[in-house]
Image: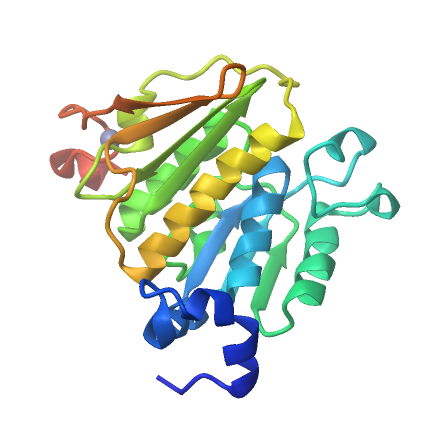
Length: 251
Ligand SMILES: [Zn+2]
């Protein structure tokens, strides 16, 4: 791998001096390819941290435009962005933050027909969607491409994070085998999205760096009302119709 430039040494100094990162780790981050599904409340934060850390290749997808009621939590979007596609608004900010990252922004709905192409050759998926239907698509892409899927969800004052690793842990379908009842507009306070997406971003960087201590088969449940962080053990469903190897041919 090419050595780090003097500019990179300066920009990433505070993380390079971490023994867990170092020069080799920074090169891994520079070569990393991450897909971020959505640039709303969670994706604004995770995209920011991926770009700030120097992730070389970031793909983002989002179909929506910026609304005024997004701005209490979607920190990549500002008042002057109202009406713009979220991908365009995010791309502009991320480029300003770190011009060295290669960022691909696609303003499209994530669907069965395009999800494999959107995820492309990314090495991990950061979930920043707001619905179970899209998460099911991401989960299938994760299992089929054999890449980790860092799940994050928020509702009101609560957040949840876990990391699904195909072949090793339960998958999204094992955890939520039935279609979740979707609410159209969930209540949320900005920092709940920030906290949840920060945990996801940390998981993503650990995956890139090859570090242990991941949220494998552990669902972190963050309850901000009394600031408790609980862990719920989750298990692979042997009859899962997505990650069960014998049934995988049916995907
Ligand atoms: Zn499964």
